[in-house]
Length: 190
Image (cartoon, rainbow, N blue to C red; front, side, top):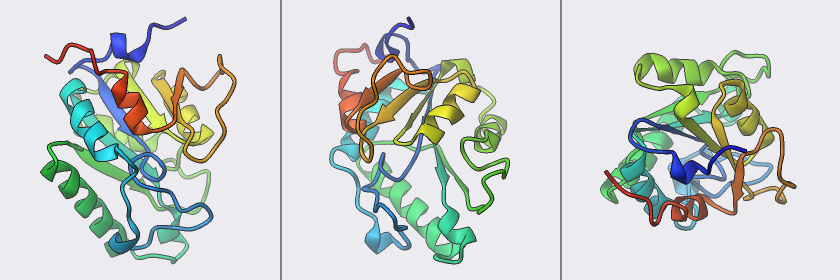
């Protein structure tokens, strides 16, 4: 059994985050098509401020098929991401970069659970070591994405019931990003 993430993670580790249902409230069966529809999940901004003190690099990897389907524009997606990152930064948190896959095809190299966005992140941040990385998401495709790269995985139960652990794809699970961040409450911050 692996030690808890909170006992391992430090500034040499990378935090990979899904967006919808992790950072913001997910609209099930629908897309967030503009900034006015974006609502941070309860406690997410505080969680990101805290997690930024622990992890050296924080990146978002998000499937955004709505662009490929013509439901929203690439400009709207960029505005949402810029506003999200800016609001997090104003609250003392940090996201180093946001990666989005707008492809409709499930076989696209960048569409999770495929690993293209992680490979882009590693090109941009060569210090990323996938064995010292955590993927936090609320779908099994997020968990599979992480496991394909030997990351530790954290499942958030924001849209699914909790899974019985141990689970092949899930190392830890919590109700929210805030609940995950609270596990580090007593961790040493370097």
